[in-house]
Length: 210
Image 1 (tube, rainbow, N blue to C red):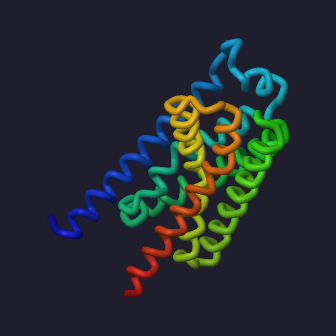
Image 2 (image 1 turned 180 degrees about the horizontal axis):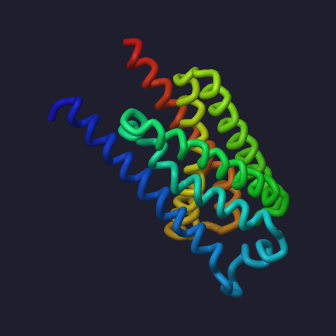
């Protein structure tokens, strides 16, 4: 099999994973918002009940951002339907503002105390900052930097998926203590995504200048 064919298959597999993961977690977020009863053993239920408006803000904003992420990541839509890309881009930015501010508030009383809360606090700040920077470059007409910063924003949007993968593997499959896994996930869910994103951006840059 030729190298371009392998690259195309790998790219397709990544898009499938990214899109399905985003849509599944978005569906979970919207379903969670509609729940009227919680399991007594749910470690998050009482915190969410006492929290206030930041819970629906975060779940709605992050859920909508995840729902729009596959559209924004689509090169086909960006090239052939630029109006759709721009409209969804502004909707996504609004969703990230709502979800990021909600997440910022939630970080101060996160499960796992300050160790997990600090991870979510940094994530919320970086998520909002990267998105704002991406919008700034779009307004200036610097589309190369716009795409780089929105790629970073999307990597942090996808932290919701990575967090659940870490919890599923660590606490579910490996039976590690839930709180320790949750603290690791609070930091690893976005830092791992950002590291992969930076490697991909650098590889794409080097390939385009080879």
